[in-house]
Image (cartoon, rainbow, N blue to C red; front, side, top):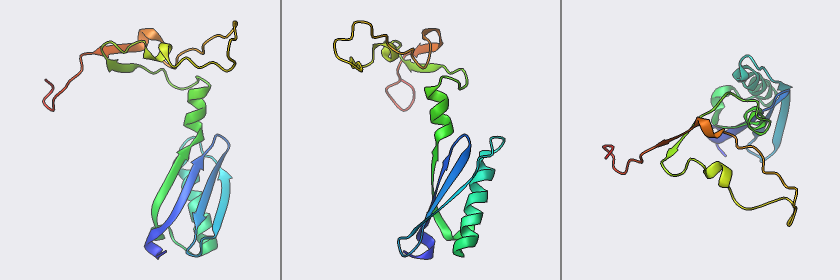
Length: 135
């Protein structure tokens, strides 16, 4: 692995941001730093700089940054994100409610489907465009 192919990964969580770095020998080094909700990039940069100081690599040594954001995933799963609309092809407005017929326990008579991530009144249908000029 040349210096220009070093990789660093960041997973931003609600409390901590995890940084991982793989060196030329394949050794993985990690760092956990507090997340910075006002500007999540600050926590990522802090962790990258701390790991860089430990390994002797400046931020310019990394060619790739792999990014994951548990904060966004949790907001979706807990339905506490921003109000969201869905723009979809005409005829597919209710696809979120139809979903696949999978239930946690087969033959569960009291099973209730979870609420859709986007309520029906915020799902907007449009005529699908087929060509590059909108026709």
